Amino acid sequence: MTLYLKDAQFIDWQNLVIHLTHLAVASGPKGTVSKISSLPAGDALAADDRIVDCKGKFVTKSFGCGHHHIYSTLARGMPAPRKIPTNFPEILEYVWWNIDKQLDLEMIEASALASAIYCAKSGVTFVIDHHASPFAIEGSLETIARAFDRVGIAHMLCYEMSDRDGAEIREQGLAETEAFLASGRAGHVGLHASFTVGEQLLEEAVALAGKHQTGLHIHVAEDFSDQQHCQTNFGKRVVERLYGAGALQLNKSILAHCIHLSDRERELLQQSGVWVVQNVESNQNNNVGLGRYGDLQSRMMLGTDGMHCDMLRSAKAAFLSGQATEGIGFDTIYDRFRNVHRYIEATGTTGDGDNNLVVLDYDPPTDLTQDNFLGHFVFGIDTRHVESVIAQGRLLVEDRRIQTVDEKEVLSQARAMGRKLWAKL
Image (cartoon, rainbow, N blue to C red; front, side):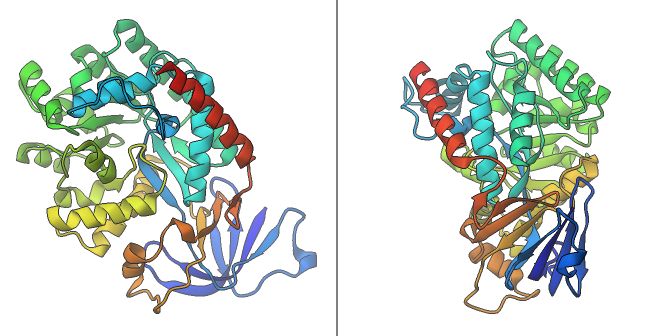
């Protein structure tokens, strides 16, 4: 199948050159995009070929999320916790660990379907997710994978293992991770954070990641309490602990947050091949501080940490907060926004090829050129301009309407599952 995009202003996501052209978009995981000077006549089209008139709108590569928590979808508008948290450990205890313990597979599926729709309508076609449901572990990752597949969003998933709920739950997490990765699905070996992970689990997680030629996906120094726990219990800082365990030797590893780092830890990260994900809105929401990432730039990605599915919003928030912490520039934030594609390519994971595109209905008040695109990216283009979204050559969103599932039905089921979850809180 070939999808033809007529009269597109095609922005090359890597060099920002803009071409007024037609595009031929081939379908499939390895589908290509070609600039063509003319469209095939109607009788030359195959039965499943289609022409979409872009009417001069901008077209560029779609977006990716480097760190998400789709299970948080049903938390929006939830009742207040039984105790108002006063610090980050209490936010985890009274909010997020209370929610994840109540999840069942039906809720997880509803969360994943709704989140996948929100991703698609925000132009996000690839998601790296970090999941937790300690009393509904078995089958949870495949449930999420199938839901994302239904909507058409590519993914790398992991289960967030820890020792906080005891040995039996830990072993179930290891078994779920092994089963998911052994099935051939793309993913990581997930860990919550150093302060909830004992020595045995860390050792087993690194070994499991090595066995499946992947990496860890773990929260690192999100709050200073993570560092305090590590120094008290292990006599070292978090990144030093991960280095000693062999986690930094796994180039596919993802370290989320990395806010409270020492110079030595930063040096270890620079010397490694691991990737770091910035989640600035979540950090501000939890009042844990802001990171400094300039020396880690080449392997920096952006995520949402489950706050939402809008990567354009995440980029703008990271840019604005970075003015005070890093003196960040337009080019720097755009690289962080796009580094997720470089990470996915480096891991050899499919689903994020050139045939993942977004059509932007952005009618700028000033000229948009190769030279000033980044100014429009930061201060102009946002999710309301996402008109159509193509994933692996397939239209997921057309004229702002999801094409692959019944959105009203999915969101109605999500609301029902939200009520079920809230009743258990």
